[in-house]
Amino acid sequence: TKWFSIGLGFRSSFAITEDGAPSGTDPSKGVSLENMRLYTAAKVHENITLEFNTERSTGNDGVDTDQRIRVLDAVAKFSIKGFDVWVGRFLPPSDRSNLDGPYFLNVFDFPFVQAYPAIFAGRDNGVAIMKEYGGGKFKWSYGLFEGRTGSTNAGTNPDQGDNFLHAARATINFWDPEPGYYTTSSYYGAKDVLAVAFVLQHEEDGAGTATNAGDFTGWNVDVLMEKKLNNGGVVNLEGAYYDYDLDDKVDASLTQGESFFALGSYLLPAKLGWGKLQPYVRYQNFARDTRTQDGGKRERFEGGVNYIIDGQNAKITTSYFVDEGVAPGSQNTFKIGLQFQL
Image (cartoon, rainbow, N blue to C red; front, side, top):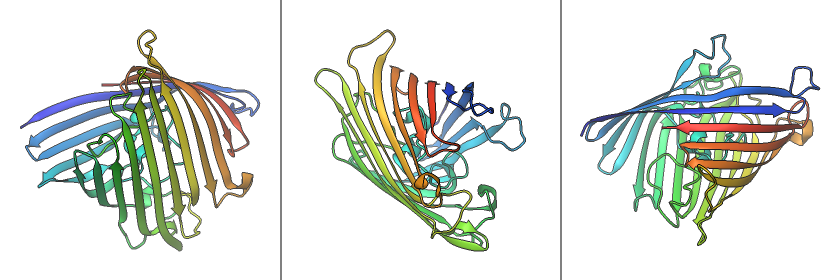
């Protein structure tokens, strides 16, 4: 009834961006350590599990970022008569991409159209209750979280009443079930998945400034379809639509508007060397209400190939994408991403 586990995750990339150098006319080139994580978990009682994860942070706060380690997750998990109750810092009920985290996406880069509030890396401090039925054919989660505070705002804190952020998610799986709270966006043929989820987050006075506050309401629908074909190949289609409402308040940390992304990939059945190739395409679009340049719209056209060595535990991604609606104009980027975890 008692155990302890430890793991780690590593993500690094090399990127070349056209006209991205400080000169404005030369390409930027560089290697980035995207993520370095240490995972730990312990079963302290038959109904109680502790999880503690860290991340090497890229925060710009005057601290040497190569030496700065931040708390990612610190959560106590209770199993009570078929319900799971989590207390601490963790991912609130939100969209599939956020519950995937960077390591369980079907691409390398996290979608910029995901813009829910968070303390750090999608996390917040709070408590949540969750339950699943039919081994994960249907599941729901609901939680109360800290939401906006003085330390999580680029400007002054609008939530002077210290209100909770309410977060809820409900998922139905029409084909194979998906048990558990966390998600992934590719099973590489291990499951046939058709999942539809709805998410709602709301905080009174969660947007704006201390002198001009408004409510924050965000919601989204996300869909994942993955099917293994008779030839051994795997088709994967994923998409999500988001709506963020700030009561038309100007907010330095949040963005009002509508966004979506659509992604398609195909895992080739034949093995090539260590693994299999998975070409993909993705399109992202964010219509930002508070930005007048480019009509408020930012969009990205992306194509690439994942080299799947061991599922999400070992893969290499080569991608090329074009960003429109970013200062000072469009940007073209070539990237090679490495991901390994245990």
